[in-house]
Length: 277
Image 1 (tube, rainbow, N blue to C red):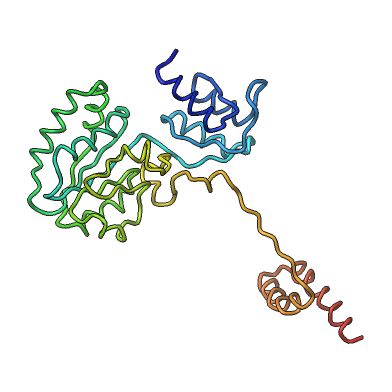
Image 2 (cartoon, rainbow, N blue to C red):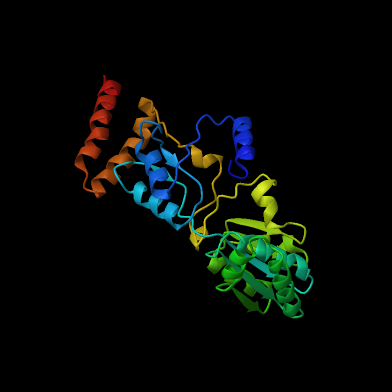
């Protein structure tokens, strides 16, 4: 049995999951859910992260006749860590590697906020910890296309972060909470030295299916609301139509939609005739 399958099945049972699809290949699995097969019922929404093939399949199918909704375009994992001179290099290195180990396509970004940060100590810790990781090869390749940014202060650091729009944003600085209001774009935020990204993955209660590759500028992470849709309902009385009708008729007239206008004015004529009688 594949590692961790027992644990996943146990959690699925506890959560009330009724169907599990075992399929090989991103295109086959995503297509089966989108179109439906003899063994897989068609679904309305397909959520969850994957590699570039999973993302491509989801994006293609959401625009096809399958008529399926997806959560967001989600690519390789990423983290942006903002650190000041008070940040522990051991913690900073561990947080960077916690995302780098996902795969060679992952990207981690270190933003140095202000003076006094011992970058050499952080780099030494990254190298030391990476060598000890079972997935160190993946992490090492991810580090190869990651980078460090030097910011004059926290305002400049957060300005860069908002442009980058990271999947995970770790703010490992003194009094981290005071900077929360300046955060505009991020999938999930981790404030302070005692909040590693790992807690968001497993235990803090937030969902870690998050937008990547800058999509945090226009998407939020998956939540309970993602599984719902909303229907609006309106019901007017005669008096309600008398009050709103003239405005609706005028806006329809401005747009050149005569049938829209008449759907209101014909009713208003009935109402006025009744009042006159």
